[in-house]
Amino acid sequence: MSVEITGPWRERYEEVLTPKALDFLVALDREFAARRVALLDTRRARRARYATGQLPQFLPETAHVRADPSWRVAPPAPGLLDRRVEITGPPDRKMTVNALNSGAQVWLADFEDATAPTWRNIIEGQLNLIDALDRRIDFRTAEGKRYALGERLATIVVRPRGWHLVEKHIVVDGRPVSATLVDFGLYFFHCAQRQLDAGRGPYFYLPKLESHREARLWNEVFVFAQQHLGIPVGTIRATVLIETITAAFEMEEILYELREHAAGLNAGRWDYIFSIIKNFGDRPEFVLPDRAEVTMAVPFMRAYTELLVRTCHRRGAHAIGGMAAFIPSRDPKLNEAALAKVRADKEREAGDGFDGSWVAHPGLVPVCRDVFDVVLGDRPHQIDRRRDDVQVTADDLLAVDRTPGRVTPAGLRANVAVALRYFDAWLGGTGAAAIATRPTDGGVAVNLMEDAATAEIARCQVWQWIHHATPLAGGGVVTADLVRSIVEEEVAELRAGRPASGRDRAAAAAELFERHALAEDLTDFFTVDAYARHLVTVVPRGGVLGAVS
Image (spheres, rainbow, N blue to C red):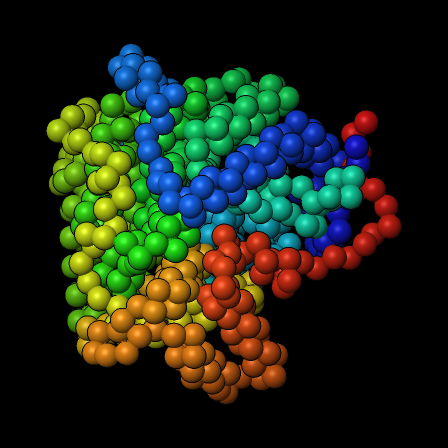
């Protein structure tokens, strides 16, 4: 088997794409590529069954796993005992320094939803992690501002891209390698021993799993990688994002499959809502109101989060709460109101038994920490709080029709505006974008950190509302023509004052939106198509750069 790099070669890329690192990627691909494809086929078959009226359920064939009270996950690894505040963001150079210095216990270095997967972002993100562990990432901006690492740094946890994505710039025997294995493999190859030398370990967040069989594949990847590089088996720790409706029915089984390497579960709220629409969007009882109305307090979201805490604590794992996406501004009144909402959200999580939670900006770290300090005190977590009072049924997890709220003209426009602006940023290489929300209640717009998951919700809700001719509060219904008129207005605003290249990118964002929000069928992920069309830059080098026989 041979591997070829088809992406542009830039300064220091040879430090990441070494012959031995490429050989490791080939070994991972050789071992796991076929199983990955088979699991993706299983996903498609499952969704086809849902389209015929079937609904998910707790699996009867794994009832013995759920009923067995004796098994536990591995004990917390160094640096993962106290996780009360976790900050997320892409591994660009500035974010790497700011996140590590933020005062959070954990930094989720995100190659997934917060990173537009350009070749440069992927390889330089790996370089930044190596440099951070070697403490040589200090730098100055063009304006002269200096960024340097402090003494107390957050624990790094890497989130690779999901199983559904490929990396078209690394080709093995003529086909692209799994993006998941690229992100995992390069970081593990270069940084596992570095982390062990620093008293931590190679830790990961696993995104968009849909079943315990996908967790089993991850566990096999972990065992193989550790054995291949001579790292003790069980060194890796992984936290799984429960961000699909199917995974919500298999939480215990997912922990069981990963139990030697499991660190906990996270409530990935935005992708979870996206998953609901993607799987059941054809059915009228699953139509959701404005995104702002789908809070963590609505019945189906409440059932999901309470079940997650109960499941984690029953098995000795951390339960990590959802994202606070507010971006602080210079307006003190705006900040006061928004931070009050953030605080209330974190108080709900801490009160429900979560052991920590996510924030998107260093300015939110103190708010989240203060809330969890009140509940935890000197304890590192509250895993001993079992939540045996929680009893969640399949009907509870699927009670979307009990969600209060309306579909409003402002909510429709907000979805179009957010999706267009995010697509525009993503096409420009930015995967985490601060975008001003369009208030649906007459309030003041606030900046939220939007990523691929929130853009997916926005475009899927628009598709769902068109598909069902959903009535709008105040009169009228959502139609494709109405949406196109809003797109035209929003694109005109995006293009205003831009040079020609910026206007072209806004037009590309509009075309991307229409292809994935206005089509007859709802696509699984906008990122698959958009990556292939817009972010792949192939530069054939005329030779093999690494090989494994």
